[in-house]
Length: 329
Image (cartoon, rainbow, N blue to C red; front, side, top):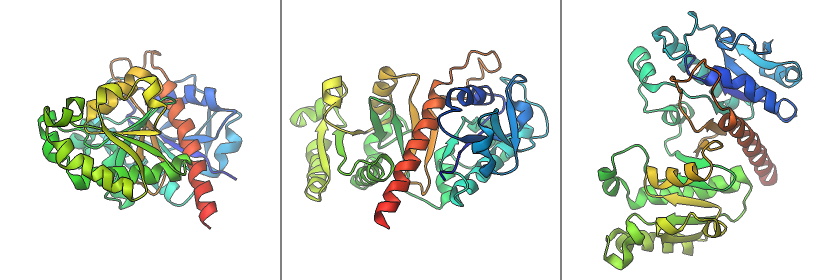
């Protein structure tokens, strides 16, 4: 039997707790998941079924949102992070990782956290979720993918100033990003021969050296080398012409050179259904592509579409990974 997904509560003062029951309502007849957090932080009208173990989640789905309780102590106030909650947010993530590592859960879906609150109040020493999960998994090489039904993108560099991108973008980093993405497309998306498109760093992919030398000097030679090694890869391509519908039909995933080059097209194409995925972890991890949204927390305005998409994609990836493991055994 397929194990349920585990959904972490995220920041209790954000929109995570109010989205969980909405996701249950949409998915209760489709897949099984359980929410890990303090049930007092959920909306008072939420149909909750307390469970003692992940194995009870599937049966509980018919009656309400399965909740594996973690006591956070103080109540939550929407829009205002409570310093006393910070350590518990971290503990929930650690507990959830334990569930996927020991196969009690098939995949991990994480609700948004408030990184500054964790850093200021609990000594959180990581830039964000992905780096913490990589630490817990003992995995150094992890990349971020953003995905929706129409597009998958992977930025080679992420949260750094644009001026720092040319120095941070090295042949080793790009090779690692492409290799991890290629492997993940096979293992987690069931695509045996993934088609990878790589954007150029400069406008018009350098335009033959007129707008930058990186494409000529090392990006194109690296891609040619990887192509010769058996990866179906095209590029470097001008980023301004590779995201329209006809162009997207020619590849399964796009590798971009920096944050906005990757995120602008996917958020333009499908703002509400984007999913954040961590590639390279020994377990499946997805997350909605939005933050804690303190400004609308507790007002009933939060849109559950991205969380629903993240749970669906987590279940699909877990199934693909299971099928890949069975084919190799």
